[in-house]
Image (cartoon, rainbow, N blue to C red; front, side, top):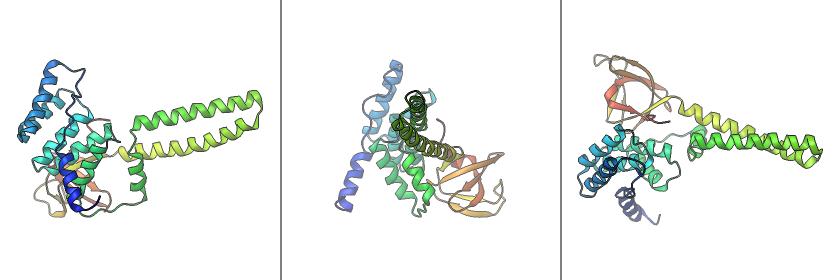
Length: 255
């Protein structure tokens, strides 16, 4: 970017944009109308109405990246940054290479996460997050069948070129399997995002002492549940505590 001003202008343009083309092309006529009505509410600055209508569509089972993206934009405009981040994260799971979704997510993330600590594992996960789990699985499967095929060619035709290709594909297959397992393992924990500023306590109840502060929009791992309270782990700092169940929301309503 040329400077902070141009960055802000671009941000305003993208955050104000919607997927205007309906993502519900195979849905009922009522769902099509509801999506257009939500977009109209958004365009008129009636963000609460837009949020309510988008959420109704999600409850009816119309789950796709455009719907999550639009809902995230509405939450952002309504100054609910934690909820906006949550919806962008869900949208990215379905459409990880969409530039608008990724830009909005990174921008809002920068607003609520002032302390960004990343290790090498986080870097590799970011790279792999540009692909869905299904895409990684298909890629590894294709490499596997090519590997088996060239081994068979080597056995049938006894040519060294097929052996070297098999060795190369075997190495790629090994790396690909490792990458897929790493990505799936990182997604296995119950990850959630804080919807409000919250204080994590040292036990499941308001009478327990406060352990640490959780800002709105912070990503945490859910590790236990007890009578309306969730035990969470703040992975990068190794902190554990308990928060009210309604103060955070799990990312993975979809896989």
